[in-house]
Length: 522
Image (cartoon, rainbow, N blue to C red; front, side, top):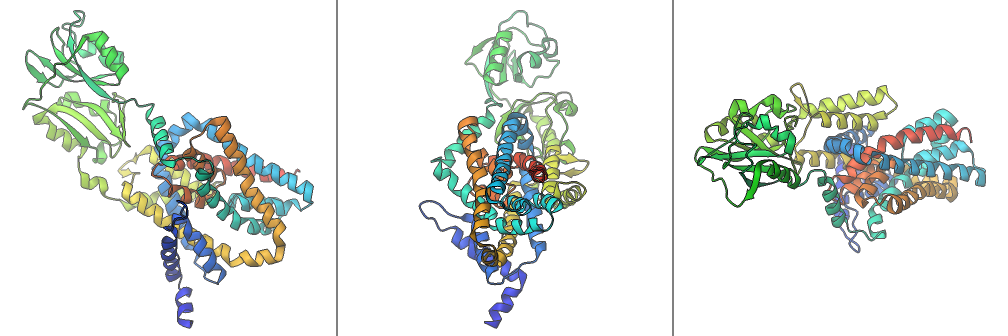
Protein backbone atom coordinates (compact mmCIF):
# COMPACT_ATOMS: atom_id res chain seq x y z
CA UNK A 1 0.00 0.00 0.00
CA UNK A 2 2.83 2.38 0.87
CA UNK A 3 4.42 1.56 -2.49
CA UNK A 4 1.23 2.53 -4.36
CA UNK A 5 0.90 5.74 -2.35
CA UNK A 6 4.51 6.62 -3.09
CA UNK A 7 3.88 6.11 -6.81
CA UNK A 8 0.73 8.25 -6.74
CA UNK A 9 2.67 10.96 -4.94
CA UNK A 10 4.82 11.28 -8.06
CA UNK A 11 3.00 13.77 -10.26
CA UNK A 12 4.14 12.31 -13.56
CA UNK A 13 3.05 8.78 -12.57
CA UNK A 14 -0.38 9.94 -11.40
CA UNK A 15 -0.82 12.04 -14.54
CA UNK A 16 -0.22 9.20 -16.97
CA UNK A 17 -2.17 6.73 -14.82
CA UNK A 18 -5.21 9.03 -15.03
CA UNK A 19 -4.79 9.34 -18.80
CA UNK A 20 -4.39 5.57 -19.31
CA UNK A 21 -7.47 4.67 -17.23
CA UNK A 22 -9.51 7.44 -18.85
CA UNK A 23 -8.75 6.32 -22.39
CA UNK A 24 -9.92 2.79 -21.57
CA UNK A 25 -13.14 4.07 -20.00
CA UNK A 26 -13.64 6.71 -22.71
CA UNK A 27 -13.89 4.06 -25.42
CA UNK A 28 -16.83 2.33 -23.73
CA UNK A 29 -20.09 3.16 -25.54
CA UNK A 30 -23.54 3.15 -23.95
CA UNK A 31 -26.33 3.45 -26.56
CA UNK A 32 -23.86 4.94 -29.00
CA UNK A 33 -22.57 7.58 -26.57
CA UNK A 34 -19.03 7.52 -25.16
CA UNK A 35 -17.00 9.96 -23.07
CA UNK A 36 -13.88 9.76 -25.25
CA UNK A 37 -11.20 12.13 -23.98
CA UNK A 38 -13.69 13.75 -21.56
CA UNK A 39 -13.32 10.67 -19.36
CA UNK A 40 -10.01 12.14 -18.17
CA UNK A 41 -11.77 14.68 -15.95
CA UNK A 42 -14.06 12.10 -14.35
CA UNK A 43 -11.19 9.74 -13.53
CA UNK A 44 -9.27 12.73 -12.19
CA UNK A 45 -12.21 13.73 -9.96
CA UNK A 46 -12.25 10.30 -8.33
CA UNK A 47 -8.50 10.15 -7.76
CA UNK A 48 -8.51 13.77 -6.60
CA UNK A 49 -11.08 12.86 -3.95
CA UNK A 50 -8.70 10.18 -2.66
CA UNK A 51 -5.87 12.65 -2.29
CA UNK A 52 -4.04 12.50 -5.63
CA UNK A 53 -2.67 15.91 -6.58
CA UNK A 54 -0.92 17.20 -9.68
CA UNK A 55 1.32 20.27 -10.03
CA UNK A 56 -0.52 23.40 -11.23
CA UNK A 57 2.19 23.97 -13.85
CA UNK A 58 0.98 20.87 -15.73
CA UNK A 59 -2.45 22.47 -16.04
CA UNK A 60 -0.96 25.69 -17.41
CA UNK A 61 1.28 23.85 -19.89
CA UNK A 62 -1.66 21.78 -21.09
CA UNK A 63 -3.88 24.84 -21.35
CA UNK A 64 -1.47 26.90 -23.47
CA UNK A 65 -0.71 23.96 -25.80
CA UNK A 66 -4.38 23.19 -26.29
CA UNK A 67 -5.48 26.79 -26.81
CA UNK A 68 -2.53 27.68 -29.05
CA UNK A 69 -3.09 24.72 -31.39
CA UNK A 70 -6.82 25.49 -31.51
CA UNK A 71 -6.04 29.09 -32.46
CA UNK A 72 -3.52 28.10 -35.14
CA UNK A 73 -6.02 25.68 -36.66
CA UNK A 74 -9.03 28.00 -36.44
CA UNK A 75 -7.29 31.28 -37.36
CA UNK A 76 -8.04 31.60 -41.09
CA UNK A 77 -11.57 30.27 -40.66
CA UNK A 78 -12.16 32.49 -37.61
CA UNK A 79 -11.76 35.74 -39.51
CA UNK A 80 -13.96 34.47 -42.33
CA UNK A 81 -16.58 33.38 -39.78
CA UNK A 82 -16.37 36.75 -38.06
CA UNK A 83 -17.26 38.46 -41.33
CA UNK A 84 -20.05 36.03 -42.22
CA UNK A 85 -21.50 35.01 -38.84
CA UNK A 86 -19.96 37.48 -36.39
CA UNK A 87 -23.23 39.23 -35.52
CA UNK A 88 -25.08 35.93 -35.11
CA UNK A 89 -22.44 34.32 -32.88
CA UNK A 90 -22.00 37.54 -30.91
CA UNK A 91 -25.78 37.66 -30.38
CA UNK A 92 -25.80 34.09 -29.07
CA UNK A 93 -22.94 34.91 -26.68
CA UNK A 94 -24.91 37.92 -25.42
CA UNK A 95 -28.02 35.77 -24.93
CA UNK A 96 -26.02 33.22 -22.94
CA UNK A 97 -24.27 35.68 -20.63
CA UNK A 98 -27.28 37.93 -20.08
CA UNK A 99 -29.55 34.97 -19.29
CA UNK A 100 -26.98 33.83 -16.70
CA UNK A 101 -26.96 37.35 -15.25
CA UNK A 102 -30.77 37.46 -15.10
CA UNK A 103 -30.89 34.11 -13.27
CA UNK A 104 -28.29 35.41 -10.78
CA UNK A 105 -30.27 38.59 -10.02
CA UNK A 106 -33.56 36.66 -9.78
CA UNK A 107 -31.96 34.20 -7.34
CA UNK A 108 -30.72 37.09 -5.20
CA UNK A 109 -34.21 38.57 -4.82
CA UNK A 110 -35.98 35.24 -4.40
CA UNK A 111 -33.56 33.58 -1.96
CA UNK A 112 -31.95 36.52 -0.23
CA UNK A 113 -28.44 35.09 -0.73
CA UNK A 114 -25.60 37.57 -0.62
CA UNK A 115 -24.84 38.94 -4.11
CA UNK A 116 -21.12 38.34 -3.54
CA UNK A 117 -21.49 34.57 -3.19
CA UNK A 118 -23.93 34.55 -6.14
CA UNK A 119 -21.43 36.44 -8.30
CA UNK A 120 -18.88 33.78 -7.41
CA UNK A 121 -21.41 31.08 -8.29
CA UNK A 122 -21.93 32.76 -11.68
CA UNK A 123 -18.18 32.84 -12.40
CA UNK A 124 -17.80 29.21 -11.28
CA UNK A 125 -20.80 28.04 -13.27
CA UNK A 126 -19.16 29.52 -16.38
CA UNK A 127 -15.66 28.37 -15.27
CA UNK A 128 -14.37 31.90 -15.84
CA UNK A 129 -11.21 32.97 -14.03
CA UNK A 130 -11.53 36.58 -15.30
CA UNK A 131 -15.11 36.50 -14.01
CA UNK A 132 -13.86 35.37 -10.60
CA UNK A 133 -11.22 38.11 -10.57
CA UNK A 134 -13.94 40.66 -11.31
CA UNK A 135 -16.20 39.18 -8.60
CA UNK A 136 -13.52 39.17 -5.87
CA UNK A 137 -12.58 42.73 -6.78
CA UNK A 138 -16.23 43.76 -6.49
CA UNK A 139 -17.39 41.68 -3.51
CA UNK A 140 -14.29 40.34 -1.73
CA UNK A 141 -13.27 36.79 -0.79
CA UNK A 142 -16.85 35.57 -0.39
CA UNK A 143 -17.01 35.33 -4.19
CA UNK A 144 -14.28 32.67 -4.09
CA UNK A 145 -16.51 30.45 -1.96
CA UNK A 146 -19.29 30.65 -4.56
CA UNK A 147 -16.80 29.97 -7.33
CA UNK A 148 -15.53 26.84 -5.58
CA UNK A 149 -19.07 25.54 -5.10
CA UNK A 150 -20.20 26.03 -8.71
CA UNK A 151 -16.95 25.25 -10.52
CA UNK A 152 -17.06 21.39 -10.42
CA UNK A 153 -20.51 21.22 -11.99
CA UNK A 154 -19.55 24.09 -14.28
CA UNK A 155 -16.88 21.76 -15.72
CA UNK A 156 -18.84 18.50 -15.63
CA UNK A 157 -22.24 19.95 -16.52
CA UNK A 158 -21.02 21.66 -19.68
CA UNK A 159 -19.27 18.50 -20.85
CA UNK A 160 -22.34 16.33 -20.30
CA UNK A 161 -24.71 18.88 -21.85
CA UNK A 162 -22.59 19.26 -24.98
CA UNK A 163 -22.06 15.52 -25.32
CA UNK A 164 -25.79 14.79 -25.02
CA UNK A 165 -27.17 17.77 -26.97
CA UNK A 166 -26.95 16.18 -30.46
CA UNK A 167 -28.85 13.15 -29.13
CA UNK A 168 -31.46 15.34 -27.41
CA UNK A 169 -31.99 17.34 -30.60
CA UNK A 170 -31.90 14.13 -32.68
CA UNK A 171 -29.23 15.62 -34.89
CA UNK A 172 -26.85 13.59 -37.04
CA UNK A 173 -23.30 14.91 -36.53
CA UNK A 174 -22.09 13.49 -39.85
CA UNK A 175 -24.93 15.19 -41.72
CA UNK A 176 -24.12 18.43 -39.90
CA UNK A 177 -20.48 18.09 -41.02
CA UNK A 178 -21.64 17.75 -44.64
CA UNK A 179 -23.94 20.77 -44.34
CA UNK A 180 -21.21 22.90 -42.77
CA UNK A 181 -18.78 21.87 -45.48
CA UNK A 182 -21.35 22.81 -48.13
CA UNK A 183 -21.87 26.21 -46.50
CA UNK A 184 -18.12 26.78 -46.24
CA UNK A 185 -17.51 25.97 -49.89
CA UNK A 186 -20.49 27.99 -51.14
CA UNK A 187 -18.26 31.06 -51.38
CA UNK A 188 -15.83 29.10 -53.53
CA UNK A 189 -17.88 27.45 -56.30
CA UNK A 190 -16.35 24.41 -57.92
CA UNK A 191 -13.78 25.13 -60.59
CA UNK A 192 -13.83 23.27 -63.86
CA UNK A 193 -12.67 23.72 -67.44
CA UNK A 194 -14.05 23.79 -70.93
CA UNK A 195 -12.64 24.33 -74.40
CA UNK A 196 -13.77 27.31 -76.43
CA UNK A 197 -13.25 27.87 -80.16
CA UNK A 198 -12.63 31.57 -80.83
CA UNK A 199 -15.23 32.81 -83.32
CA UNK A 200 -15.69 36.41 -82.20
CA UNK A 201 -14.04 38.61 -84.85
CA UNK A 202 -13.66 41.43 -82.31
CA UNK A 203 -11.16 39.29 -80.42
CA UNK A 204 -8.98 38.50 -83.41
CA UNK A 205 -5.42 39.78 -83.00
CA UNK A 206 -5.90 41.19 -79.52
CA UNK A 207 -3.82 40.25 -76.48
CA UNK A 208 -5.27 38.97 -73.22
CA UNK A 209 -4.18 42.25 -71.60
CA UNK A 210 -6.00 44.32 -74.25
CA UNK A 211 -9.12 42.22 -73.70
CA UNK A 212 -8.83 42.56 -69.88
CA UNK A 213 -9.75 38.89 -69.97
CA UNK A 214 -9.16 38.14 -66.27
CA UNK A 215 -11.07 41.23 -65.13
CA UNK A 216 -13.94 40.74 -67.59
CA UNK A 217 -14.56 37.03 -66.97
CA UNK A 218 -12.80 36.05 -63.67
CA UNK A 219 -11.64 32.95 -65.54
CA UNK A 220 -8.15 31.78 -66.51
CA UNK A 221 -6.90 30.54 -69.89
CA UNK A 222 -4.51 27.70 -69.12
CA UNK A 223 -3.75 26.59 -72.70
CA UNK A 224 -3.96 27.95 -76.21
CA UNK A 225 -3.66 25.99 -79.45
CA UNK A 226 -2.76 28.15 -82.43
CA UNK A 227 -2.14 26.55 -85.82
CA UNK A 228 -1.73 23.11 -84.23
CA UNK A 229 0.75 24.22 -81.53
CA UNK A 230 -0.26 24.18 -77.83
CA UNK A 231 1.37 26.55 -75.35
CA UNK A 232 0.89 28.37 -72.05
CA UNK A 233 -0.38 31.91 -72.62
CA UNK A 234 0.66 35.11 -70.89
CA UNK A 235 -0.89 38.58 -70.82
CA UNK A 236 0.83 39.43 -74.13
CA UNK A 237 -0.50 36.36 -75.97
CA UNK A 238 -2.58 37.31 -79.04
CA UNK A 239 -5.75 35.35 -79.77
CA UNK A 240 -6.95 34.65 -83.28
CA UNK A 241 -10.21 33.38 -84.72
CA UNK A 242 -10.03 29.62 -85.03
CA UNK A 243 -7.75 29.24 -81.99
CA UNK A 244 -8.77 26.68 -79.36
CA UNK A 245 -8.43 27.75 -75.71
CA UNK A 246 -8.87 25.88 -72.45
CA UNK A 247 -10.72 28.05 -69.89
CA UNK A 248 -10.65 27.29 -66.14
CA UNK A 249 -13.09 28.86 -63.69
CA UNK A 250 -16.50 28.69 -62.08
CA UNK A 251 -19.55 27.97 -64.21
CA UNK A 252 -20.47 31.67 -64.37
CA UNK A 253 -16.89 32.65 -65.24
CA UNK A 254 -16.78 30.11 -68.08
CA UNK A 255 -20.09 31.40 -69.43
CA UNK A 256 -18.72 34.95 -69.49
CA UNK A 257 -15.61 33.69 -71.29
CA UNK A 258 -17.79 31.93 -73.86
CA UNK A 259 -19.74 35.15 -74.53
CA UNK A 260 -16.49 37.06 -75.00
CA UNK A 261 -14.56 34.53 -77.09
CA UNK A 262 -16.82 32.28 -79.08
CA UNK A 263 -18.47 28.91 -78.68
CA UNK A 264 -17.93 25.87 -76.47
CA UNK A 265 -16.62 22.78 -78.25
CA UNK A 266 -15.91 19.11 -77.48
CA UNK A 267 -12.49 19.42 -79.11
CA UNK A 268 -9.58 19.29 -76.67
CA UNK A 269 -6.03 20.60 -76.59
CA UNK A 270 -3.74 17.58 -76.30
CA UNK A 271 -0.69 17.70 -74.05
CA UNK A 272 2.53 17.66 -76.04
CA UNK A 273 6.07 16.99 -74.94
CA UNK A 274 6.62 20.74 -74.74
CA UNK A 275 3.69 21.37 -72.40
CA UNK A 276 2.94 20.14 -68.86
CA UNK A 277 0.30 20.56 -66.13
CA UNK A 278 1.17 19.54 -62.57
CA UNK A 279 0.11 20.04 -58.95
CA UNK A 280 2.85 21.88 -57.04
CA UNK A 281 3.05 22.12 -53.22
CA UNK A 282 4.04 25.40 -51.60
CA UNK A 283 6.77 24.52 -49.07
CA UNK A 284 9.30 27.29 -49.75
CA UNK A 285 9.18 29.95 -47.02
CA UNK A 286 10.39 32.64 -49.42
CA UNK A 287 7.19 32.65 -51.50
CA UNK A 288 4.72 32.47 -48.57
CA UNK A 289 2.48 35.57 -48.31
CA UNK A 290 3.57 36.81 -51.74
CA UNK A 291 0.90 37.48 -54.36
CA UNK A 292 0.88 35.82 -57.77
CA UNK A 293 1.50 39.28 -59.25
CA UNK A 294 4.67 39.63 -57.17
CA UNK A 295 5.90 36.22 -58.31
CA UNK A 296 5.32 37.20 -61.95
CA UNK A 297 5.22 33.58 -63.12
CA UNK A 298 4.18 34.32 -66.70
CA UNK A 299 7.10 36.59 -67.44
CA UNK A 300 9.71 34.64 -65.47
CA UNK A 301 8.67 31.06 -66.23
CA UNK A 302 5.99 31.25 -68.92
CA UNK A 303 3.71 29.54 -66.38
CA UNK A 304 0.11 30.02 -65.25
CA UNK A 305 -1.57 29.02 -61.96
CA UNK A 306 -5.03 27.80 -62.93
CA UNK A 307 -6.32 27.02 -59.46
CA UNK A 308 -5.31 27.05 -55.78
CA UNK A 309 -6.38 24.21 -53.52
CA UNK A 310 -6.39 25.25 -49.85
CA UNK A 311 -7.91 23.31 -46.93
CA UNK A 312 -9.88 21.14 -49.35
CA UNK A 313 -11.33 24.10 -51.29
CA UNK A 314 -10.54 25.12 -54.87
CA UNK A 315 -9.92 28.87 -55.16
CA UNK A 316 -9.88 30.82 -58.41
CA UNK A 317 -6.46 32.51 -58.59
CA UNK A 318 -6.06 36.20 -59.29
CA UNK A 319 -3.01 38.48 -59.36
CA UNK A 320 -3.88 39.51 -55.78
CA UNK A 321 -4.05 35.93 -54.47
CA UNK A 322 -1.56 35.43 -51.63
CA UNK A 323 0.24 32.12 -51.42
CA UNK A 324 0.04 30.20 -48.13
CA UNK A 325 2.30 27.45 -46.87
CA UNK A 326 0.77 24.08 -47.79
CA UNK A 327 -1.23 25.37 -50.77
CA UNK A 328 -1.49 23.03 -53.75
CA UNK A 329 -1.19 24.96 -56.99
CA UNK A 330 -2.27 23.59 -60.36
CA UNK A 331 0.37 25.00 -62.71
CA UNK A 332 0.42 24.97 -66.51
CA UNK A 333 3.86 25.52 -68.01
CA UNK A 334 6.28 24.40 -70.64
CA UNK A 335 7.98 21.13 -69.73
CA UNK A 336 11.40 22.75 -69.53
CA UNK A 337 10.20 25.43 -67.09
CA UNK A 338 8.11 23.16 -64.85
CA UNK A 339 11.15 22.05 -62.82
CA UNK A 340 12.04 25.70 -62.21
CA UNK A 341 8.48 26.39 -61.02
CA UNK A 342 8.61 23.37 -58.69
CA UNK A 343 11.89 24.61 -57.26
CA UNK A 344 10.43 28.09 -56.75
CA UNK A 345 7.50 26.80 -54.68
CA UNK A 346 9.40 23.99 -52.92
CA UNK A 347 7.14 21.05 -53.79
CA UNK A 348 8.59 19.04 -50.87
CA UNK A 349 6.16 16.63 -49.18
CA UNK A 350 8.64 15.93 -46.39
CA UNK A 351 8.95 19.63 -45.61
CA UNK A 352 5.19 19.89 -45.39
CA UNK A 353 5.06 17.28 -42.62
CA UNK A 354 7.98 18.70 -40.61
CA UNK A 355 7.23 20.59 -37.41
CA UNK A 356 9.25 23.61 -36.33
CA UNK A 357 9.13 24.06 -32.54
CA UNK A 358 10.35 27.69 -32.66
CA UNK A 359 7.06 29.24 -33.91
CA UNK A 360 5.12 27.28 -31.29
CA UNK A 361 7.36 28.47 -28.46
CA UNK A 362 7.47 32.07 -29.72
CA UNK A 363 3.70 32.15 -30.24
CA UNK A 364 2.97 30.90 -26.73
CA UNK A 365 5.46 33.38 -25.22
CA UNK A 366 3.73 36.25 -27.06
CA UNK A 367 0.33 34.96 -25.97
CA UNK A 368 1.32 34.80 -22.30
CA UNK A 369 2.75 38.34 -22.46
CA UNK A 370 -0.42 39.69 -24.11
CA UNK A 371 -2.55 37.92 -21.49
CA UNK A 372 -0.50 39.43 -18.65
CA UNK A 373 -0.59 42.95 -20.07
CA UNK A 374 -4.35 42.94 -20.77
CA UNK A 375 -7.56 41.77 -19.13
CA UNK A 376 -7.60 38.71 -21.43
CA UNK A 377 -5.65 36.46 -19.05
CA UNK A 378 -3.67 33.38 -20.03
CA UNK A 379 -6.36 31.69 -22.15
CA UNK A 380 -7.54 34.82 -23.93
CA UNK A 381 -4.03 36.10 -24.62
CA UNK A 382 -2.75 32.84 -26.10
CA UNK A 383 -5.94 32.35 -28.15
CA UNK A 384 -5.88 35.88 -29.58
CA UNK A 385 -2.20 35.70 -30.52
CA UNK A 386 -2.60 32.26 -32.14
CA UNK A 387 -5.56 33.49 -34.21
CA UNK A 388 -3.68 36.56 -35.45
CA UNK A 389 -0.45 34.66 -36.18
CA UNK A 390 -2.34 31.94 -38.05
CA UNK A 391 -4.00 34.60 -40.18
CA UNK A 392 -0.64 36.29 -40.89
CA UNK A 393 0.91 32.97 -41.89
CA UNK A 394 4.45 34.35 -41.92
CA UNK A 395 6.51 37.03 -40.19
CA UNK A 396 9.99 37.43 -41.66
CA UNK A 397 11.54 33.95 -41.76
CA UNK A 398 9.06 32.49 -39.22
CA UNK A 399 6.09 30.48 -40.49
CA UNK A 400 3.13 30.49 -38.12
CA UNK A 401 1.85 27.13 -39.23
CA UNK A 402 1.82 23.48 -38.15
CA UNK A 403 1.30 20.21 -39.96
CA UNK A 404 -2.09 18.63 -39.33
CA UNK A 405 -0.64 15.62 -37.51
CA UNK A 406 1.53 17.79 -35.24
CA UNK A 407 -1.44 20.01 -34.40
CA UNK A 408 -3.63 17.04 -33.47
CA UNK A 409 -0.91 15.46 -31.29
CA UNK A 410 -0.05 18.63 -29.36
CA UNK A 411 -3.71 19.52 -28.95
CA UNK A 412 -4.50 16.07 -27.53
CA UNK A 413 -1.54 16.16 -25.14
CA UNK A 414 -2.45 19.67 -24.02
CA UNK A 415 -6.08 18.95 -23.28
CA UNK A 416 -5.47 15.69 -21.33
CA UNK A 417 -2.84 17.47 -19.20
CA UNK A 418 -5.28 20.31 -18.57
CA UNK A 419 -8.26 18.07 -17.77
CA UNK A 420 -6.25 15.84 -15.43
CA UNK A 421 -5.18 18.73 -13.17
CA UNK A 422 -8.57 20.47 -13.26
CA UNK A 423 -10.24 17.20 -12.29
CA UNK A 424 -7.93 16.32 -9.38
CA UNK A 425 -8.18 19.88 -8.05
CA UNK A 426 -11.99 19.88 -8.15
CA UNK A 427 -12.20 16.33 -6.74
CA UNK A 428 -10.15 17.27 -3.68
CA UNK A 429 -12.80 19.71 -2.37
CA UNK A 430 -16.00 18.42 -3.94
CA UNK A 431 -17.29 16.32 -1.01
CA UNK A 432 -16.15 18.78 1.69
CA UNK A 433 -17.89 21.63 -0.07
CA UNK A 434 -21.10 19.59 -0.26
CA UNK A 435 -20.94 18.97 3.50
CA UNK A 436 -20.23 22.58 4.39
CA UNK A 437 -22.74 24.37 2.20
CA UNK A 438 -25.41 21.78 1.55
CA UNK A 439 -27.28 21.17 -1.65
CA UNK A 440 -29.01 24.49 -2.23
CA UNK A 441 -26.00 26.47 -3.43
CA UNK A 442 -24.90 23.54 -5.56
CA UNK A 443 -28.33 23.45 -7.18
CA UNK A 444 -28.17 27.19 -7.87
CA UNK A 445 -24.75 26.70 -9.44
CA UNK A 446 -26.18 23.89 -11.57
CA UNK A 447 -29.06 26.11 -12.68
CA UNK A 448 -26.59 28.87 -13.59
CA UNK A 449 -24.70 26.37 -15.72
CA UNK A 450 -27.63 24.73 -17.49
CA UNK A 451 -30.26 27.45 -17.97
CA UNK A 452 -28.08 29.78 -20.13
CA UNK A 453 -27.13 26.86 -22.38
CA UNK A 454 -30.77 25.76 -22.73
CA UNK A 455 -31.95 29.30 -23.52
CA UNK A 456 -29.14 29.82 -26.05
CA UNK A 457 -29.87 26.46 -27.69
CA UNK A 458 -33.53 27.39 -28.14
CA UNK A 459 -32.64 30.78 -29.65
CA UNK A 460 -29.99 29.23 -31.91
CA UNK A 461 -32.25 26.46 -33.14
CA UNK A 462 -35.48 28.36 -33.73
CA UNK A 463 -34.38 31.96 -34.35
CA UNK A 464 -31.00 31.62 -36.07
CA UNK A 465 -31.14 28.06 -37.51
CA UNK A 466 -27.51 27.49 -36.50
CA UNK A 467 -25.68 24.32 -37.52
CA UNK A 468 -25.30 21.99 -34.52
CA UNK A 469 -21.47 22.02 -34.83
CA UNK A 470 -21.41 25.81 -34.71
CA UNK A 471 -23.87 25.74 -31.81
CA UNK A 472 -21.70 23.33 -29.81
CA UNK A 473 -18.63 25.50 -30.33
CA UNK A 474 -20.57 28.66 -29.48
CA UNK A 475 -21.88 27.13 -26.25
CA UNK A 476 -18.38 26.03 -25.23
CA UNK A 477 -17.02 29.48 -26.05
CA UNK A 478 -19.92 31.30 -24.41
CA UNK A 479 -19.43 29.23 -21.25
CA UNK A 480 -15.66 29.95 -21.55
CA UNK A 481 -15.25 26.19 -21.14
CA UNK A 482 -12.04 24.69 -22.49
CA UNK A 483 -13.04 21.22 -21.22
CA UNK A 484 -16.33 21.68 -23.07
CA UNK A 485 -14.47 22.42 -26.29
CA UNK A 486 -12.32 19.34 -25.67
CA UNK A 487 -15.49 17.24 -25.41
CA UNK A 488 -16.88 18.70 -28.63
CA UNK A 489 -13.60 18.34 -30.52
CA UNK A 490 -13.63 14.59 -29.98
CA UNK A 491 -17.13 14.32 -31.48
CA UNK A 492 -16.37 15.54 -34.99
CA UNK A 493 -13.71 15.69 -37.68
CA UNK A 494 -14.81 19.21 -38.63
CA UNK A 495 -13.16 22.34 -37.23
CA UNK A 496 -16.51 24.18 -37.16
CA UNK A 497 -16.76 24.01 -33.33
CA UNK A 498 -13.24 25.42 -32.90
CA UNK A 499 -14.01 28.32 -35.24
CA UNK A 500 -17.24 29.12 -33.37
CA UNK A 501 -15.50 28.76 -29.98
CA UNK A 502 -12.76 31.16 -31.05
CA UNK A 503 -15.42 33.65 -32.13
CA UNK A 504 -17.67 33.38 -29.06
CA UNK A 505 -15.04 33.04 -26.33
CA UNK A 506 -13.58 36.59 -26.26
CA UNK A 507 -17.03 38.17 -26.57
CA UNK A 508 -18.40 36.09 -23.69
CA UNK A 509 -15.34 36.66 -21.50
CA UNK A 510 -15.52 40.45 -21.78
CA UNK A 511 -19.30 40.50 -21.35
CA UNK A 512 -19.19 38.29 -18.25
CA UNK A 513 -16.69 40.61 -16.56
CA UNK A 514 -19.05 43.53 -17.31
CA UNK A 515 -22.11 41.63 -16.00
CA UNK A 516 -20.32 40.75 -12.75
CA UNK A 517 -19.50 44.45 -12.30
CA UNK A 518 -23.15 45.35 -12.88
CA UNK A 519 -24.30 42.84 -10.23
CA UNK A 520 -22.91 45.24 -7.63
CA UNK A 521 -25.64 47.69 -8.64
CA UNK A 522 -28.47 45.17 -8.28
